Structures are given as structure tokens and as C-alpha cells.
Image (tube, rainbow, N blue to C red):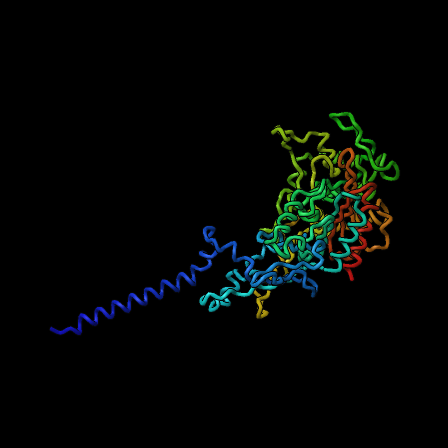
Length: 490
């Protein structure tokens, strides 16, 4: 009997089994490795996150965030001027926020854009090195904003500032007072003192909650800075600079309570062209305009500027939602529609209207960029360790909020606020804008705003500054904006 044929068959079958086993091992270690590693049932998921250093985060040539070895093969994060930059960088201590969260995969080396380049390292089980990020933030201007907000904000209260490039949407400043320093809990994230400090910060201190930044993640009543949007809606309804408006005392129709102007001189207190009512910030005329427009039109018109949208700055990095509500739900579940009195107060940025500084900067950007708002972003690019670019920002249009003609008109009016109107103290600072002073209730200081653009005659940047304290926006926020823009324009 010839044994060669059966032996040959067994040998071929054995070889097929070996090849099948090799293919299975390669499939598990290669294509399935990431799914297995990140599976919630994998106990190593949480034990390994500190085993490798994450990539750096830089801006303006400065390294703002880096990793340091805290124990044998364990790493924590180090934040340069942590409180200054944390509204943008966020923090990483197992969990993550802001940029640390949005690009966690790239920073850790787990993102496929890194692994596809370093496929052999992945194949043999070697961890890929994380990418480094470069931000659009201007470090010197960010520091200026932080210090200015600290000085201008009333003790125990809040302030925020945003500056964005109107042609690209790149954020140059996103500063908050108070702010959290991630070094207090992220240098050695496994230490008991770190978790206790983070828990303490989560509770906050009265109204100040450092973990919630006041530039992107907190809303405030915008006061008369909201009249930029109201003026834009008026222009869209066919009004123009010379349209006469009633600036006499307004008595609210439901309560018979006056809606007072901040002053009784010039345009306010009689009848005036719309441009004059804007630059002197006559509450009566904009209260009347709001009631004529209706709260629904204000709500719908505001959506073009970003109101009602949780603006996504980067993947999974959202700003708080600003709002012009047509109705509100009380704590006991009762729905209250916005009536005529509330509509009039909404028209001057009070009642239930709420905005982040980012949102008001987007309103100013629509004016400065001839009606177009660009999508805000903060990460310019990501570089692998071999310096190849694995991500680059692609500026995109957020929306068309108004026509170019209406935007040009509002640019002139906002210059007039400084040269002729309520912000005369800001002359010579090369900024144009709109003041705002919002009352926040008994015992709570005003939310003081200045929202606008710079340079005055050739807008390149839009900004919004808010500080809480006594007095008005022209003096409580305007000089802060001037100091920030002086540094940005350098």
C-alpha cells in the first residue's frame, strides 16, 4: 500500500491548521486589538491609562501641557500656567475635558491616524507614541485676559472673555475668572489628595465654580450688547439707520411698570433715528421693537447666530447653549410663555435671555465678517512624533446671519458707540462695539459687557468681555477688552 498520499494529505491539513492559527492570532492582535483594549469589560483599561506619556499641547511656541513620570512607568500631566489656559486645554486625570478630551486618542497614541502610520508597532504590541497638538490661542493675550478679568471682576464673582479670528473662526482667547489649575489634581492623578481636591472643586465655592469656565461653558444675561442682534433683526425687517423710532418712556403693557433708559438725554426720551437709538442704547425703542417683532421671531432669528445650539468647538468639546426662550419651565414643572412684558425685557438682553461670551463674540463676528460666522475652533494641527501632520484645521462656515449690507451698517453703528455714544471712554483703543449692563436680581451685581471687533476700521477679530460687578459695561468691561485687543494686535 502506497503511504505517500495519506501522509501528504495529513501534512497539507496540518499546514492549513497552522496558517489558520497564524491568521487568527494576527487578526486578534492586529485588527481586533483596539476593540479588545477599549472594551469596558477589560480590567486593564483603567490600569493602563497612566502607563504611557501623552502628547504635548502647545500654543504660540510655548508648551502648555506635557507629561511627567511620577512613578516607575506611570505618568501624570503638567500644566503651565494651568489656571490661565485650562478653559481651553481642559485636564486629564483618567477622565478628561476640553481639548484633552476632544483629542484624547491622538494625545495617547490610540487614534487610528497614529496607529495606521505605526502599524508594525501595533502588530508587535508596542504602544504608539501620542501626537502633539498646536492651538490657535495667543498665549500672551490669554494671560492678559486672565489678569484683566481678575482685576475687573467683583470679589467672589465671575468674568469671561473670548476673541476669535473672524475670517477663520480660530479662537485667540478664551479666558475665565475664576479658573481651575489642573496641577492641583492631575500631576499625580492616583493620589488620594488629588481625588479629594477634584471633589472639592466640583462642589465650588458659592457662585464661583472654577471647573465651569465662564468663557465657553457658562451663560449670563447679555444686557444691551444683545441690541446688536436686535438691530440686525430690525434691518432684516426693512429698517435702516434713519428709520425714526420712539425713544420716549415705555410703560410695559401687562404690568404698567416703566422700562427705564439708562439715561434721559440725547436720543433717548423722545424720537430719534434707529442708529442714534442704538449708539445711545435706548431701552425703550428696543423694548418696543421686540414686542413688534414677537419673541418667536427673535428666537428664530437668533438661531442664525448660534442661539439655541450647543456650538461644537472640537469633537465632544461643546460650548454651553445660549437661549432666547419663547417659554420657560419652572422648578415645579410649570410652563410659562414669554409674555409682552417679558418680550420687551428680552429685547434689551434681560428676562430669560442668556448667552456665553463665545456666543456674543459670534454675534460680533457676523457683523465684522460681512454677515458670515465661521465655526469656532481651537486646535490648529496635530503632529506625530516624526513631525508628520495627522490632523489640520479646516475652517468652515457656521452660517450666514445677515446680509453684507446690513453688516456694513452695523459696523458703522458700533464704531459710533465709541466715537459718539455710550463708550466714549474707549476712544483711542482701536475697538468698536456695544456696551451692555444687565441687572441680575437683588443682591447680585450687574453682568457688564462690551462686545465688538478690532481693528476699528478693518475688522480682523471679534470679541466679547463680561465681568460681574457694580457699574456699567463701558467702564466694567470695555477697558478689559481694550487691553486684550492691544495684546492680540501686537
